Image (cartoon, rainbow, N blue to C red; front, side):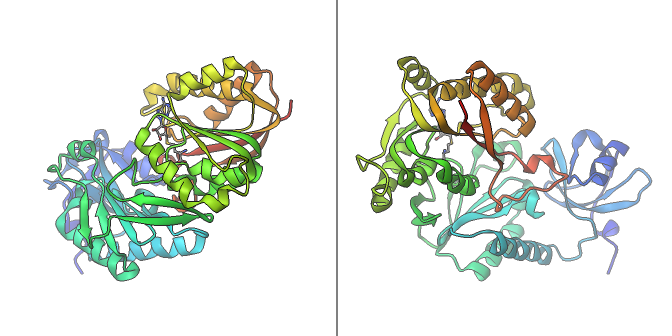
Length: 404
Ligand code: SAH
């Protein structure tokens, strides 16, 4: 077998790039590339240190600032075989850690050593996102799709396209659509709660699967009158309803609320276990305005959930993001009755867990409330975290009780 170094273009990286990889990371930034053989977009490359020693095999992007994403520490003789093996490993990891659901993330990019590939399963439909040049190549797509069909036999496979991602990767435009089969909608179940799924609608790939374990944890501590802010299609609200006497849920997106209402209808018997009026109240509003108005009106709740969109899209937004989180948390804390439960989330990678807890601490001081932390949680285990790749950990979900 020829050594990988001679079969793929070589890329020599700087000592800073080397130390990043030695530290367990899998990315090399363009600014850490010292020299490179001509490498076609999306090609496999051999990554070398300044002395020419091979450090492993990577996927190359000609446009992204993350020019190199490691795929193996070793030479790769048969890339399709490596892809199939990684997919098999990802599936067997989920068999180990995923319970009580037929919807979960099957492949999470770098965290499954398949950089640029995200695959979510919603019952019998698979939803694929391709984020890099290498994963977009036709032979790679074919291998991925055939491996998925063979192992999981889904009714259909749908591709979700983010036009901006393709632009950044300088990939030709493409539309979301079916890659295999014809089915585009289904119903999935998590923690005994049912949800409609339409593969070609909705945000993300359809649902916020990363919150699955947090829904169940929140439900354990939810009671009384509950407010779910940024509710989307009702993930938290539907989980809280069996434990609560009243649930009000707020989002600015009408399409999301329409599906939330259809989801409530699917779970009628579950909801009726808790709610007095047997209905979740869905409110279309700007959450910032609504929280301000409700707090000013003296509304009180026993449970409040805050699950906003990412306020910090880049590290430059950190300051204003923290201010945004503090504002909504402060208002929520003012409205919670003593003994009440706060479930507060952030999906901004750039706001660390420490930043988030510090923000919550100052919000509690300003609101004159004492908080007891019940859980400092993250994303569900089907969104694995690599310890030395901090970017793989992004979700924070804090559950706290207002002592007084
Ligand atoms: N809690 C949800 C996910 C929330 S995602 C779940 O578990 O499924 C964030 C949501 O915030 C989206 O549904 C988006 O429509 C909504 N949103 C964004 N900005 C908003 C605003 N200013 N006011 C109210 N909702 C907003």
